[in-house]
Image (tube, rainbow, N blue to C red; front, side, top):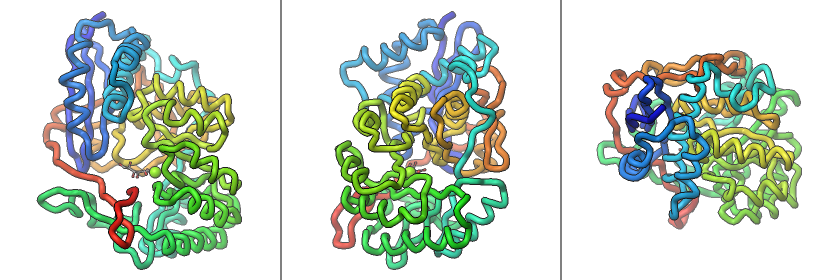
Length: 405
Ligand code: GCO
Ligand code: MG
């Protein structure tokens, strides 16, 4: 069997998604997600100019050799762009392998470790009360784990709280440039501690509560917040600080028993080796799209398993339903699966383009038994929504200093 064509397709049904479609001479095709929010064209160029030409006429069944060829074989290895390109190719090859075998990908990984995949949903609000009302509504829908984010009084915009009309395109207007946000740790501490205090008062001890700091704190601030939140028993605190220096998490860990999660921007095991082997974190949040596909993420999850670290894959709306499908298989297989982030159903246009067979209800997902990844891509529908340039915001401290977004 040979790879006869690889298409790299971009579509914007409300946000940009980059999809790889590998076509074989046997007529079977596979799909992969290569979306990097705000850097879509860089991955497209990397694929079209550098990756695709090397793969035409190769046997699509050689997943491991192709992965090694694109990773080990390349002098300029790692980094988000290169690893997203590898990821999309890798997912598409697993999809093809499953289709040839007539088996869902989780069977190729070794079979299921559980009946279903527990999801955590997002409750956001302009006020604490609104956030808690939204959380209550999610609990009514069956969610047993909820991430709480609330607007910070005194700051113009807060991560995770975009009102109804304000999507990123609207924030950016006709000449897209990164929207600017402001950050104040002092204002945030007060809000976030109050949010979780009220949440526990309202909901009691049983529901799993989570929160994403989105890397805004310094290590010592992250340590302080983790400690302040201890009475409210979080399932995990996400991205408490940046981990470019992995030692930062040693500092946070030494001060708190609040479980810690990180990893959505990680590209390989090398971004989290110390975090995992020193057991400074409890959940690894790497995504198949950004960490080298199913092959890359599976290795991270296996390494995490022997250090009692669980998986909790990134599930933001900027990962396409193909990545969601890949996660469904990894989540169903991984013996050390923790929880899957879920940002809710996709919009109508996206659902028209990406059709997947995985079921979501009562805060739980059920992996499909369709051969391969169990997701399809409608090229004609995708072509109706052309690419639109868009940026993620940037963040500054109140005095204007550039900060982590
Ligand atoms: C999450 C994430 C996202 C990111 C987004 C950036 O936990 O889901 O932090 O919301 O901000 O993926 O593109
Ligand atoms: Mg996050």
